[in-house]
Length: 172
Ligand SMILES: [Fe+2]
Ligand SMILES: [Fe+2]
Image 1 (cartoon, protein in one colour):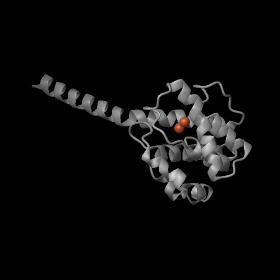
Image 2 (cartoon, helix red, strand yellow):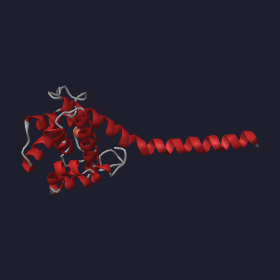
Image 3 (tube, rainbow, N blue to C red):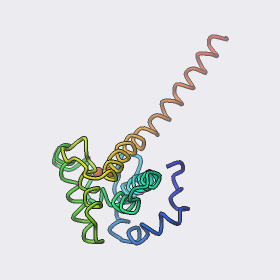
Image 4 (cartoon, helix red, strand yellow):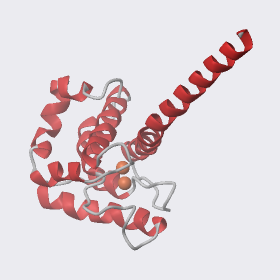
């Protein structure tokens, strides 16, 4: 997303996902840390909105992309603390998310595929639709982006201050 709140000012996007955003089951995602610096609700909206924009540009089914993107991580445990290993988490949580999503809305085949296959790359489940591939790629990108950006900022600042002090020393 170009800005964190861009989705809030996009009435067409909101019309597609508002009924889901209003659900306590979706709001509850804000209680879970996703990638150290973001909660699972922020992450899910970012994946949903960016995927929606791409699908729209590509004249694909942007409605299913937006809705399933929002629901792709609809699970309620801390994936960093649970007993099973990361491979198992990659396999299990899309299934848990699908089951939870089906409790709050009716899903079409494409939406089911988007949720189930969003770990493509980490699991062998191959996306059946272009929209599923988009969500899976955006999810990877967002995970890295959310995880690394505060860290990167910290490193950049550190490098900047070190180069400034080195320059001062050289000049001095
Ligand atoms: Fe996920
Ligand atoms: Fe995700």
